[in-house]
View 1 (tube, rainbow, N blue to C red):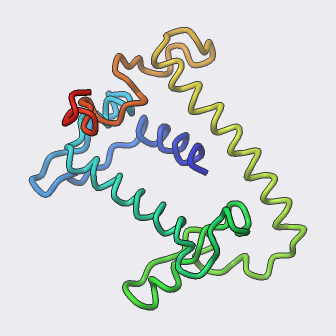
View 2: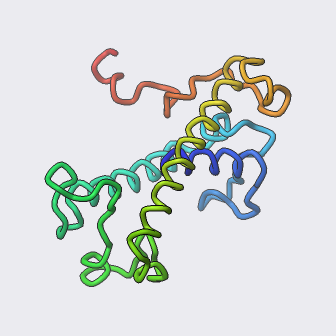
Length: 172
């Protein structure tokens, strides 16, 4: 699922510019003339930390099983993300990540299995796609089908910050 988010996000960032301001100060979103990684480099540090905070909260919710499900290493079905029901009831209304409106609640096990296989295959294809984009950006000509389509990037796509924010205090 993460590879699918990355692949779709890469395409959206390469082609869509949001017209509203990115910050309360009125700064605009980075231009689509920049590669998605260069756009990431151009956003404020506080915005990056907000994104990581949301990801950390989602990971924590998964690790805790939403307070209801067992941990995934103790028998929870692989890929089963816990419902936000307890959070929704006690704190704030929020939709579940999978099937937020309950359209698939009466789906047969056979259909669920078929869709799971399709999702796994789509995830594999998305992994190939996002790595193809990153490869072509870092090494021009490495993916011939993307030559001239993907903008080159001279930074480090696997480093989310331009400085080593975790190692810098320790001299790393």
